[in-house]
Image 1 (cartoon, rainbow, N blue to C red):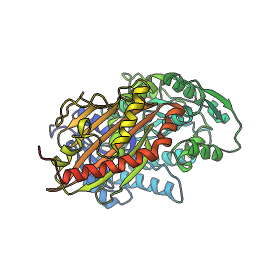
Image 2 (image 1 turned 135 degrees about the horizontal axis):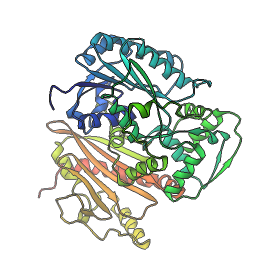
Image 3 (image 1 turned 120 degrees about the vertical axis):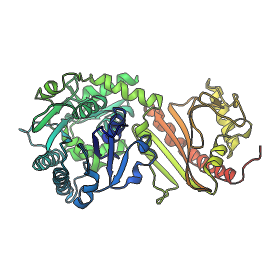
Image 4 (image 1 turned 60 degrees about the vertical axis):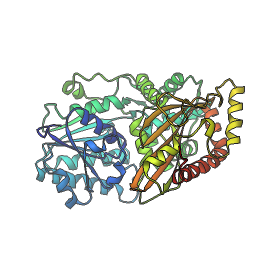
Length: 488
């Protein structure tokens, strides 16, 4: 990478959009610096070694000078998803601090994202706060390009996952009248194209650019499109709901999204989110936004293929100083159970222990349960446990390991298995080892499940007590095997 390339600062790289933007900037040949309050949260990202990471907090102006030194243009992608107590005022203050520090550092342009909405209507609190943050950036005197977008369609985005869960679980969905509000959702890929192109565009001193996809749809139409692409038959029945707060509570019950986070999304449904300006087309004529159903299909394809790398990196992000033995979360439409344990053995030794699983050695813990699962799989037309493994000691991509398939192998670091047994959804089992020193490692064992419909949800939660018992015993046996390796 040439030192002559402009240096780009990305704030919010630990977030949803920022985490997707960084690798695209790197691929485009830019020098990239990431600002994070906790740099450890970026550990394990595939692009970590290709960027510079500095610690800093926009609420502490003294920490911004180093981050902005030598920066040509900066992305300001810091947003709060809560508006409790003084969160809104703090967010506006952070934007003002960043704008002033950028001016002092000689930054040429700030690229910012906020929400779409008709200014003639009463905007809900998040949008008002984001608009004020944009104004605070502009008041610094630095050129600002502010993108205002509606719902971003991509695996892992909050709005998309709420819609996904509401559609996925039940054949009959009772919806408030709010779902008949129109919006103009934009594909994540298109949003990233706009953000990247904003580095090169000839723009005025201050630009506010409204962006959206090719379709204007009601939220009901979005849900039905999702159901059709998933092969699900869904009946949506309008049901008056007294307040958005009650609907937020229902989202909390029906999905892993808390009512606090769901509330601003529900409130946004009261107002149309539609592009009224043609500035985006005039500034970026080469970008042709895709239709909503195409964007949904892209997100589903990523999940189906297990290629949502940035989402998986977020789900796997850990800090060695805050070791949690087990975490059960839902992320990007996936149900994720991660276990981790420190092992008194070098990483290479731990890697050999988990890559020896399957075949004649079995799965180390409660093998008789695995055998029963294999028989059940055969009864339902699956492959069972009959395939064993190609080699007792070596694994490579494409190998069969009983009713798993090796999907990824990184020597002395990672093994990912894709389930080929009969399940109502898609499943993966991943093992990862991180060195903590010459003879100490962190072993991470993660089960991923993408359920299909209500059957998939029931499968996960009904069998979770058994799976939890097996996975807990297995990671302990792997750790024990790594400290007392089998001599070849």
